[in-house]
Image (tube, rainbow, N blue to C red; front, side):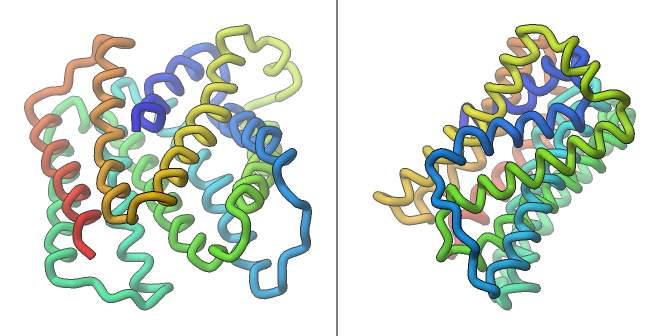
Amino acid sequence: MFFLGSAYPTGKLALNDTIPPILFGALRMGIVFVCLAPFCKIIIPEKKYILPLIAFSLSFGVGVNLFLYYSIYVSSILAPITIGAQLTIPFGIILSSIFLKESISYKKWILIITSFLGIVLLAFDPKVAEELLGALLIFAMAFFYGLSQVISRYLKELDIKFTNACAGLTGFFILLIMSSLFEGNSINILKNINLSGWFMVIYAGAIISILGHMMMFYLYKFYPVGKVLPFYALFPVFGLILTFFMFGEIPTLIMITGGIIVISSVFLLNKIR
């Protein structure tokens, strides 16, 4: 959760270091592919997996990175988007009920509504009101992240390294094309990235995307999902702490109150089975 929470302040450092957001997402996914490809067996999936694999690659490889780094890029403060990313869980539960026909109990509906009310409370903070675009973009990121988790249920028979490598390759090429179209000459930008910028790219791809997630997958071998997943609520806590030390950003009382509501709701949502 420390690694996942660090995505926001370290991403801000990289984007402040003149790396455009779409290109940063492309490079991150390129690192994911390079790291996973040597450990993957190249196969042609069965026909029933083709469409879900394409949908997973587009949502996780493209959608998540596009909206995550654009939200960081346009936001001057990170606390609202770090908290807003917690909507991944409510979105995932709602989407699972639509696509997987999973039932949602009244207790879950109450917590889903409560988590959204926590976000609404954040909107009343004057500082957050000035960051409306960043908030909307992080909501889009949370939607695509939740969608990718639902789609991954259709791919559970495939090797997770293979599916994530496919997402990495897809995200790299599509985001690179988008960067060339909307952010200028990518080759020239790449030439001007300094050492600290490349360090942030490698950290985002190798540490956050691979090591951070693989640690959770490793725990699933020994503990039930219900014991591991609630810790997901901790990543914004680490994100806010790191943001304070790296940027001196102090959340307001409204941010703290709204954050507690959102994080507590998400934690309880993960506990209910």
